[in-house]
Structure formats: C-alpha cells, structure tokens
Amino acid sequence: MYNPELDNQAEIKFKEWLDKHNIPYLYINQEIKTFSSVFRGSLKRPDFMVLLPNFGFIFVDVKNKEIQKEYGNFCIDFNETQKFSKLQRKFNLQIWYVLSNENYNYQTWFWIPVSKVLESNITPLTSSKSKEDFFPVPIKKFTQLSSNDDISRLFSKSF
Image (cartoon, rainbow, N blue to C red):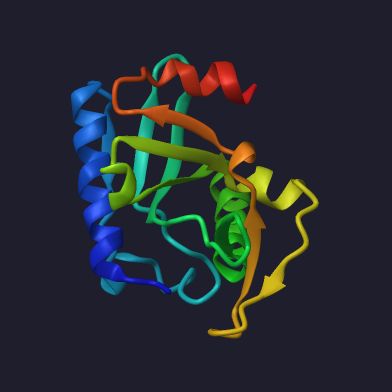
C-alpha cells in the first residue's frame, strides 16, 4: 500500500546518497501547479533528474518498497509504469525506479529501468486487496547498490 511519508523518507535518504557520492541532481517539485496541464493525468512525474558522469541525464523515481511476501517480488504499479513509459518517450530520457526501505536502513538501493520492467515479459497481476494491477518484479532483475557503491557499478551490472 502506498504511504507518502515512507516514500518521502526514501527520497530524503536517496538524496543523501547522491550527495555523499557527489552526483549532481535536480529534486523535482511534485506540486500539481508545477506540472504542465498538457501532461496531467496522462504522464507521471519522477522524483529526481540525475546527471550520470559520461552518460547524461536520467529520471529517477524513488520508492519505499519491500518484497511482498505473497508474491515473493517487488510489486511495481502497472498504471504508473505505463505513464512513466510515455514520459520517457516524450522526453527521450531513461526513467529508473530506485527502491529501498527501512529494513535495509536505506543502505541498499535496488535500481531498474522502467523499460526493463516492461520488456521483461512479466505478466501483470491484480492485487486482491487494492484491485490495482502491478508487475511482480523478481529481485534478480534489479541492480543492487549499497550505500558505499559507486554509481559506475550500475553500468557494469546493467549493460
């Protein structure tokens, strides 16, 4: 279940991780008035725009997520992923999910591009509780970075 306070905590911890590694970023204001009316409802706004050395910009959406015991995977919202995919095509910038939680003390980050979620042939399921569709994404599909890992590890594991 979505908890904005926990997602905000994850964003703060991710921002600290970026600062620790001297990675330039823009923290994107999430207020509705700062988002073009052209995009409202059809696209989703990520949390960060991150500048990766020798690569360029990517969008990052940070989530406070745990592996769901019922499914044995991270559950990624289907509709949100579709909206991010549209945004990715419009701006021609990659969008990545970055997940962590209190159980990891925000010391481990799980990275996955939105495109990989969509291209992994993972069949969406419907939550028995919320009735929302989601992708059950196995942990092995993510690139795992610890708080001490350099961002370059992301590229050695992803490409």
